Length: 362
View 1 (tube, helix red, strand yellow):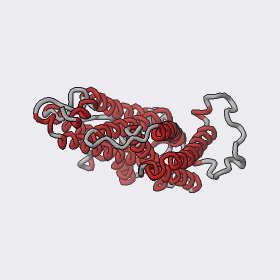
View 2: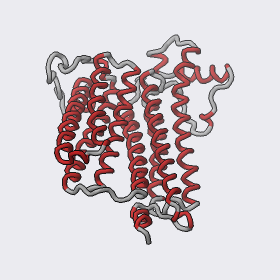
View 3: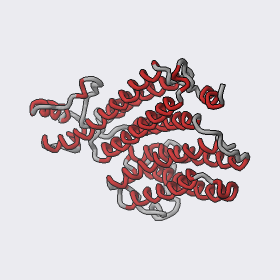
């Protein structure tokens, strides 16, 4: 058996039948997964815009099948609007909103939900065909099924989040919002890593760098953990709207470490606006320090063998902190806040790309 086929078997890509000997078919699986990753990234962008424009509570029902059809007549629009007018958001925030204004917030949430259903179809239908044709090995099928189930759970989590804003308080639970955001990043990261596995199986083994590569991988692992912690705290900041206060940097409330942190207990790390924002910005600052120091270390160890992905990680970490500071100082404009959220996804993606490549060189 050839070395290429051996590599495919170790990653669970070798199927049965003639398709098992056509590497190009397996690369097509990677391209499909990367396309799904892109769609998830767009979904995160749409979700951020929905939140920032306060559009997320405009649809008060979750109908996975029938909900694909938007209002088509004025009577339909009036029915949707009447349902919205019974929600806390309309009563406490948007009382007197016109039907025309309602349409403005409705369409963004509608597109967000339909895009999620489209991702499900783009994942499920090709998966069924690829599995049936033998282009996905049996070893990988459980991982694919797990991904699909996680995507279905993400849809349920989205509605679970929206429901929290339809009861008394016209704002969704910041815990549920963070869980919804975290699941989106997890799905994206899992699919991206699987695609990298597939692509790597079709390439010749890279030059070994030994302990120097292993040390760089460990740094990237620490950095990735920091990126994940920071973006999850970003979800808490967004859910609490804590970015609308203490809009200065590097000082916060006039000092580097503001007074009143954890004043009533450790629960403030997740519920107090000031404490949550302080932890988020501190994690971000620590992330960029680890990124830059680690980059210098990688250059010292690897010299000219430093992959482009490692340079990209360091550059993006600096850019992401810059976006965060600008978003804070300008009091969370929609454009900058959206760019900052997508910067987190790009930084995580680059960390995974760099780590995956260097793991093969250890």
